[in-house]
Length: 82
Ligand SMILES: [Zn+2]
Image (cartoon, rainbow, N blue to C red; front, top):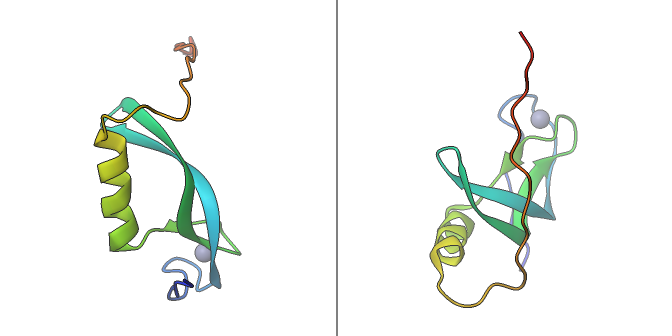
């Protein structure tokens, strides 16, 4: 299935579909890393666009209680820049 995307809202660049990895967050909290997400990506500025159906599927997958493909543990650090 090929999804079509309108021109980029910001720069009017061409938007083509790619499979990307999304850091899915609730507020500041990273709740899941979603791989293989179909998104429209602007070829000029890189802005990403998601179809409503894909947004719903991401939400569903992020909340899913089924066993994830893998688990990642990452360090949380804070910058000490004045
Ligand atoms: Zn753009």
